[in-house]
Length: 161
Image (tube, one colour):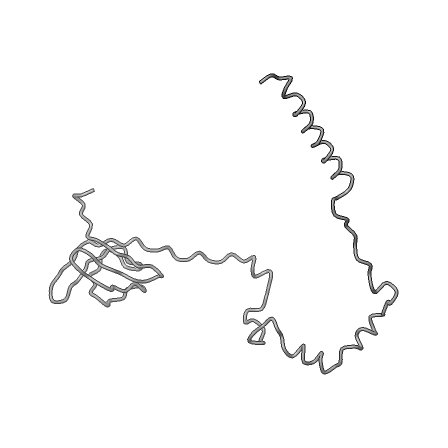
């Protein structure tokens, strides 16, 4: 195709686009108008509108607080200064390690890192130390529950890295 044969359609499309852009810029396709205010001539004072609601209706409305189900104030009163207080950080979760397991009639586990305990301690199923409860002891594995956490400990083997 030749450039001269494409010149006329390109100019036609450009002129049509320019015409449509000008038409939309000058006036919208759909007329836009605001509705006339109905209360322009009939102004009422605020005292007249307050007398329209009866005292019984106002009492019924106030007695039923639609925004609070229990109809009692919240227990901690709102205090913006209290929001600025720094909350104490939660206690760190302990780093527990399983030193050894003794399987027998009553299985036992030797655990290190219990909070408030120096060194290691021998525990059985059901024992509680510092809020941590031993839930299960099996071959080389112990399950401990507490502090919103569940630990599954396996016997550490220092010769394996």
